[in-house]
Image 1 (cartoon, one colour):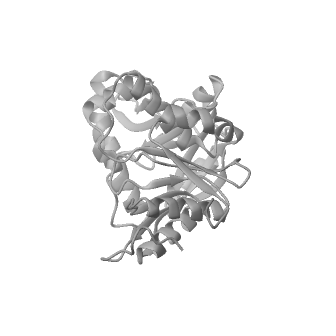
Image 2: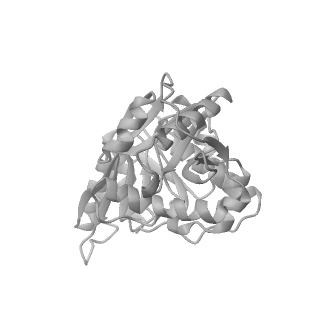
Image 3: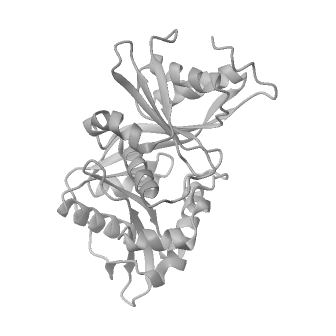
Amino acid sequence: MTATGFTADLTEDPATFLAVASPHLARDPVLTTVVSSVTHRAIEDDERGKPAPEHPRWWAVVRDGSGEVAGIAMRTAPFAPHPLFVLPMPDGAALALARALHARGEEVRGVNGALPAARTVADETARLAGGAASVHEHTRLFELGDLVVPAPVPGRLRLATGADAPLALRWFQAFEADAAEQAGRTDFGAIAGYLNEDDMRERIAAGRVWLWEDETGEAVHLTGSNPPSFGVARIGPVYTPRAHRGRGFASAAVAEVSRRLRADGARVCLFTDQANPTSNRIYQAIGFVPVVDMANLVVTPCESPPDPSHVA
């Protein structure tokens, strides 16, 4: 038992984690959508014999003094600095998680997830390392309420095909830089940098990439989606090239993808960058409502961090 009254247990086996965490994840499947979908995908990869990634890949369950699950976190991001993803948990659980990682000598340079838990983990991680934590991006999770069909625009939505893979890959990779620019940030990470054309073909074959064609048949917009996990499907990325913006393609595509996902029985959610007024406006206009505020935090340690065995 830690000084906070909570303990953190880590595993590198997604199936072992899911066996323990399923009731907690299913209790609020919109809020837990990222952890659920990533875990299910990792289990599928393991069952197919896909080699384990070189980057950190583990899941954590934080328990309270009675042994009940009080919090969930994971470290599976394939892009540097391989940030943690933290779900809501009491402050004591967040402190226990940060201290457990510090005690095992794990270097943590980024923490994403729900506030205030993600901030607490980042602050404690930085304190133990003698550094500082700062917010890189404020995000917000939305769920679709009553769908409001937007004004019609020319063209139609269609599923991407294998022939679209090169274009879809370019647009996935362009999405992050353009989204950062729209939000007024000059720096951005490399979330899409780990994808290759084979990855994109796999997403396309699974029916997870949609394109909007204008009246001439030209692809002018891309909307991605994740398969449902605990009954919740997450939309993203949503990308319109600069030359085609302002014509309503994003609203039309997201609304139609959402309608189809819901028709298949799924609840629908998505994330926005709070600093991007365009995306926040168009999603709320078609019926998405805020669920929780989140943040991506950067942890900058000092050059000579304290002894990992010292946990205050």
